[in-house]
Length: 206
Ligand SMILES: C[S@@+](CC[C@H](N)C(=O)[O-])C[C@H]1O[C@@H](n2cnc3c(N)ncnc32)[C@H](O)[C@@H]1O
Image (cartoon, rainbow, N blue to C red; front, side, top):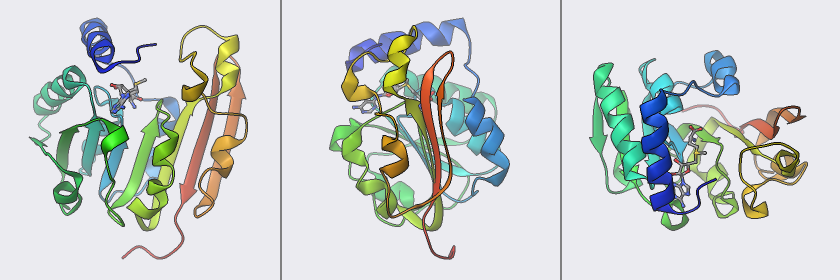
């Protein structure tokens, strides 16, 4: 598993040559019940989920530190007629309610996510615990978080992160956002070790 920005760039270039990857099955399965307002895709990679959401007319702000990944995402978006623009800060993008994709290249360790800005936040195959306290505040009332990433159970299988800092403890994700109401939670230890959470911020959508 890559760890630095340049390693991620190289991996994204390599996988883009192979094929465009399919969305995670949980995103595809839950898509019909996910809010369609402004979305944030945390560590979007080459945009398999960003593009899925944008294809249904949703505005998506997509953040990743890999310039290679964002370049691939940008090319794929234009090729399917989804407007893309580059942004330098999340504040400006958060105000947009039109469709399309706003791309921000940034180290998420240094990003402040604006408050009450998104109806949907996706975080798939990325674990940065320092973002946990920001996520509930970044959702609008009634907004939803869909989070899925590897647990320590992944160590029993090939692939995925090996560094414990990038692996959830069993049960950790279910307890990570006490301000949100859990709609769905599961942990799998079959072929891979992953935890999945769908959680909603209390309140009515504005
Ligand atoms: C396993 S990929 C997942 C990509 C995407 N969420 C998906 O499911 O296809 C992890 C992503 O995290 C990005 N990443 C890792 N550390 C990062 C950081 N500190 N800031 C921003 N992006 C980071 C990598 O560039 C990579 O695109």
